[in-house]
Length: 79
Image 1: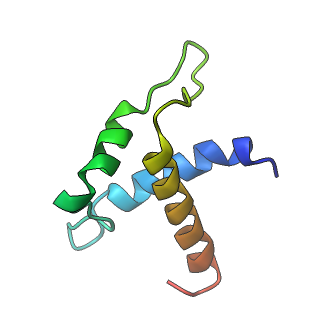
Image 2 (image 1 turned 180 degrees about the horizontal axis):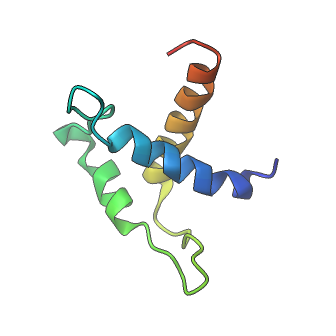
């Protein structure tokens, strides 16, 4: 699967982690020292075709990779 096709599922994985769980708490917290990650997330934009605009998003991409990895591990019973 080409990496570009993993962008949308990865964004969904991050979104899922940020949503409150059954206990009302999010499954992912971004601490103050990682504020640049939150800034990158706020910069995520889409063009007129609905595609993510790839600029100044390295930290958001890293978080997307992490959440995708955690999702894959969960499918193997690891998380």
